[in-house]
Length: 290
Image (tube, rainbow, N blue to C red; front, top):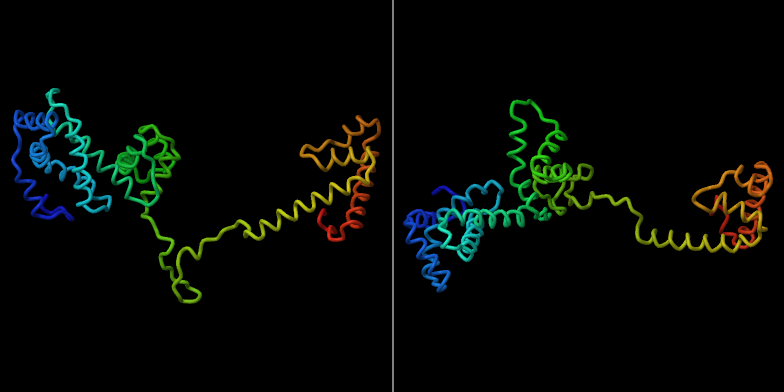
C-alpha cells in the first residue's frame, strides 16, 4: 500500500500502523459514539479502520481519479457507517462499514468520472462497475465476441436493456473530449477548435422564421382564393387536395353521381380557376403552389 499514488506516505504509514481493535473495545467505542456522541471514541474507531478505506479505494484507482479523493470519499462512507452502526447486533464494524465505504467511493466516481452524467440506479451502477469484467468473462475462449451478442448477454445478467449496455460501453471506450480541443486544419495548416467542425443541419433562425411567415401567408392566400369555386368544385378539391387522406376519383364519383372521369375534369378546372385567382390577387403567389 505504500506505493499508492496521490496519498501521502506518512498518512499511509500512520494508517497501517494504527492498532487493530478487539471486538469488545470496538463495541465499547461504538456504544460511546452512539449513546453519548463521544467524538474521541469516533476518532479512534475511524482511525483504526482507515487501512480498510485505503484498501477499498485502491481497487478503484484505475478509473483515473486522484487516489487522495477516493480515500477522502471512503472516509465519508466510514463516518456514515459509524453513524448508522448498531453495536447490539453483534456484527463487526469492519463488515458493516465495507458496504458504506464502497458505496461512497462509487458514488463519487459516477459523479466525477465524466462530465456526462450517467445513470444512478442500482442496475446502472452495477453495469458501470462490472461491464469490463463481464465482457472479459464472456470473451474467454473466443477470438472475437460480437458486440450485439455481448451486450445482450450482459443486459440479461444485470437486468438492464441492451441499449443501456451499448451506451455504457461506448462511454467507457473513450474519455471525454473537449469541444475546444485544438484540431489541425489540413487545408490551411492552422489550428482550429473541434467545435468549428460540428455541422448543424437545421435551418438558421432567420430561415425558420421566414419559412413560418411564408407558410402562414400562403395559407391565407389559398383560403381567400377558394371562394371562386362553386360548391361541387370546392368539395372535390378539398377531398382530393386539401386533406391528408385523399379520396379516389371513383369514390367521389359514386358520392356525386357522376363518372370518375367527370370528377377528374372538374378537379382540373377547379385547380385552374384557383391558380388564376391567386395570380390575379397575389402576383407573388406565382410558383408558390406548384
